Length: 139
Image 1 (cartoon, one colour):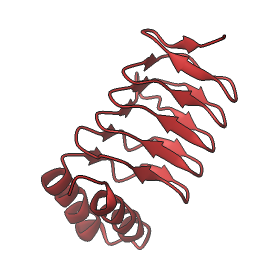
Image 2: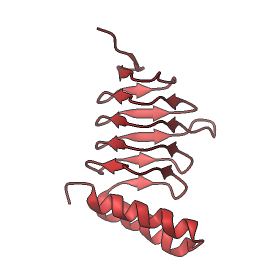
Image 3: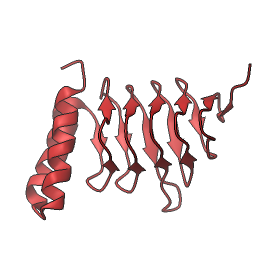
């Protein structure tokens, strides 16, 4: 599938199985997501309603990442930890293709991260983050 419907369903099933303490089934969903969709979402990763993978290929999300509601990711996005500390994402977030969000950062509400940006510092609310390293874009 080109769109992320299958990946989203497998992620939600994985989370539900994990919450129900059905670890083998959660692990099966994790492995199926890798095999069928080319994405890795750690079993402990937690996103609220409205989490959308537009194109899941190449998406990698650490198991300690926390996200609120209405988060949209495009292909090749990496959200990972650094030194054991993972990002926290607010509400209404869009992360463009190939972007990276690394380390103990907080991505505020209504933030957009541009394609291939590398976010290593927290992003303020309603910011558009661009570049390597990513900085808030101002007109």
